[in-house]
Image (cartoon, rainbow, N blue to C red):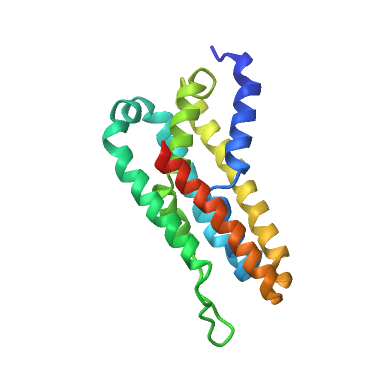
Length: 198
C-alpha cells in the first residue's frame, strides 16, 4: 500500500532536482539561445525519452544499481565530467553557420546524452530508492511515475530552452554574451565540482 505521507516530500524533491541547473537544463538553455525553441524541440524530445528510459531503469532496476553502483560510479562520474567540460568550452567556440544553417543536437543526440548525465542517473536511483513505497510495487505504478517524471522533465527543459531563446536578441551585445557564457560556465563548473567531490 503506498505511503501517502511521502507524497509532498517526493513532489518537492522531484521539482527541485528537475528544475535546478544541470547538464540537461543548461544544454537546453544554450540550444534555445543559439537556435530558438522550435529547432531545439527534437533534442528536447530525445532528452525526455532518454530521461523516461532512465526513470524506468531506476524503478525496475533499483536493487541492481544500489548493489553495483560503486563499480560503475567512477565511469559515469568521469564521462559526465568530460562531457560538461566540453559543453563549457563549446560556449566559447565560434559558431559555424553556413547559408543560415547551424549544427544542431537532434533527437538521437538528446537521447544519448541522458546515459552520460550523472545527475539524471543518480536522480533515477535516489528517487526510486527513497520513495519506493509510492513509486514502485507494480508495473503500472512504476510506468506511471516514470511518465510523470519525464513530463515534468520535459517542462523543465522547455522552460530553460524558452529562457535561452528569449535571451537571443540580447546576444548582439558582446558584453552580454560574454557575461551569459561566464555564468553558464560557472554553473557547469559547479556541476562538475559537485560530481567530482562526491
